[in-house]
Length: 362
Image (cartoon, rainbow, N blue to C red; front, side, top):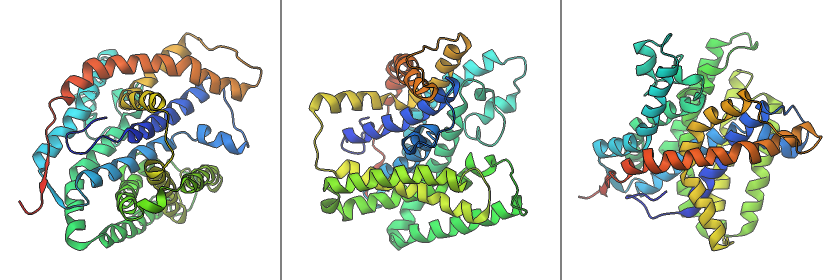
C-alpha cells in the first residue's frame, strides 16, 4: 500500500498478504473439518494465528522506517489522524453492522469499546468480526509509538533492548500473579492485549535497524532460506512447548522468540536479491493491499459458507481437504468482498492522509 511518508515497497504488501492468508486458513481449516496433525509443514496452518504476530512486527518495522529511525519528528496529531483514516472507516462499518445484527443485547459500552478496547471486554463485533481485537492492540501501539521512537533518538537503540527486557520481566510477574499455581487458565489477559504483544511491536522496530545495518548481508538468498526454516521450526516448537497456551512465567518470556523469527523473515525477504516476475509481484502486492479488509471481513464470509454447508470434497484426506476448501472455497469470495470494501470504503479515506514527519532539526 502506497504511503505519503515512505517510498512504496511492494514486498511489504506481499508480507501483509501472507499474514492475512495464515489467519484465513487457520479459521477455515477448523471450520472445514481439519484436525490435529504431527506433520511439520502443517503447523503454519494449524497455528495460523501467528499471522497476527507478523502483522504486529511489521507495524513496528514500518513505522521505524517512516520515522527514519527517529531522525524525523512525528507530528503527533497528524500521525494519529492518518491512523484513524486508515483503520476507522472499515471498523466503524463493521461496528454498526454488528450493533444492528445484535441490537437486542448490545449496550452503549459495548459499542464504544469497539474503537479502542475491543480486546479488553466483550463486544458485539465478536460474533462475525472476532479479529478486530487486534485492531485495538494496534491502536494502542499508535498512541505510544511517537514517544518510543523519540526516546530511541535520544538514548539510542539500546533503549529498545532495555524496554523489551523490562517488558518480559513485567509480563512474567503478571502471569505469575494471575497463575501462581501453574495450572491451565484463560490466557486472554495477555494473548489478546498489549501485555502479550508490545514486545512484538518493539522487535519489529529493532528489525528496522537490522535492515539498515546488515542490508548487504541480507541480500544473500541463503538468509531467506535460513529465516524460512527458522520460522517453520518456531511454529512447530512453540505449540509443543505451550508458549502461548499455558500461562507460565518462563513460557511467557519465550513468546518473543516468535516475533524474532518473523522479524528475521521480514528483513531477509525485503532485502533478498532474488526477483519476482513483475506480474507475479504485482498480483501479490495488489492482493496485499486488501489484507486489512480480508482480515476483518473473512469471518463473516466464512460464517456464511459454514452456515450453508458449502464445503466441497476435493480429496479423501480430511486435513488436506480442509486446506483446499480454505484456498478454493473461502479465499476467493473473501478477496472479492475485500476488494469491494477496500475500493469503496477504505480507499476514499486513504486519499485524505497527509505527511506527518519532518526533519528533526526543523
